[in-house]
Length: 160
Image 1 (cartoon, rainbow, N blue to C red):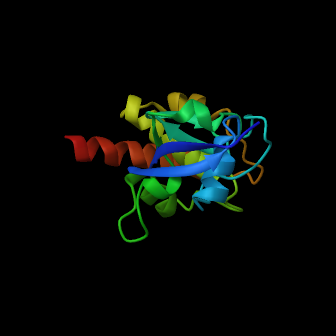
Image 2 (cartoon, one colour):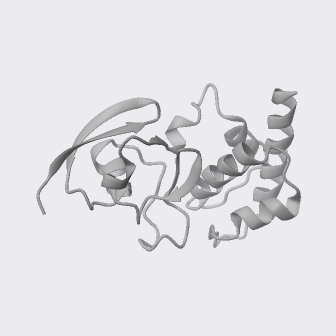
């Protein structure tokens, strides 16, 4: 296939990249835009480490062709907040120490953000359901769920 100039809106900024249209979004984010929040895990869309938000919905960037992202809003982990001003979800994960190796963290945080955008007051069961397809080998599940619930409480607090 032939490379094309592709325009993407990522983290609120427009970018032009040269890519074959069926290139996985993950590769463009990491290799061309140097955004390393989304990770390569399984390459099959099953583990969640590559999760980004596309139009506010959690999506597996390793299986989405970059051509399917035109005229859509893409947000990566780097687009949520900064070290000095983290997003409430990022802050909750820090406060709960909800990571061990950290490889799953991108997917957990981005999935949590998508959950809270559509349901700011999830129950613990709803949080577990939302995260069920994000794999964590380290066993930080208890801390992760606590972080989700802390972020939900903070999100509601900010909205009220």
